[in-house]
Image 1 (tube, one colour):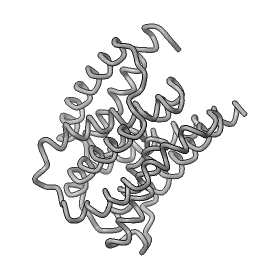
Image 2: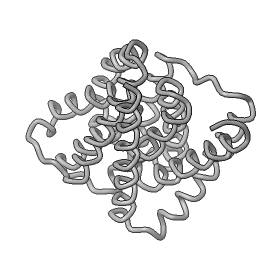
Image 3: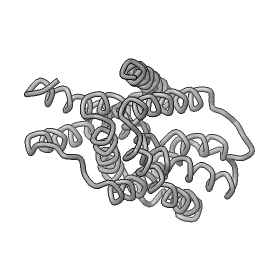
Length: 242
């Protein structure tokens, strides 16, 4: 899909992703990354997801940074920073069809795990933070979907929604910055970048309005349902290209 139609679709995907991320603390990559990958290819699609998720996280963090738990977040961030290069290497060397299959599987599996609210002793305490951070950093760099591992850690640690969102936003800023530093920015036209910027601003505004009206659990159900559909579509696309 190219020309102005492709740019409009790109803007809409970013707008929806930014809205759900601003609403739920995670979700941009889960909702938007599969579509961006199908539109732009695995490398540019994932990298744009990293950029947009980091940007919308920074917008949310600007108003909630006082609620962040620095001590709790440090092991997650350190572990993630160690595995980001490995994810970037995988994304660079794996052929397109195989990478689409991998991204589809990761998004689908991550969505199902979060939907089920998986409980595991390995995801609690400092050890759980290291496991979740390492898994998330790799997945974020390779497939653009680092949020689910962070979400599972929060569930197993007993975090409430109001605690999760600001800490998830800090995590999104830092880990996506690491991913972009490793891989660089996607190659988009000036008009596409302009559209992405407008869509991010619009999504931030829409998400803020929805946050005051939509219960958090309902928002997460919608986010995860869209993510699962996108993951399965990407998986089918990868299989068909073999």
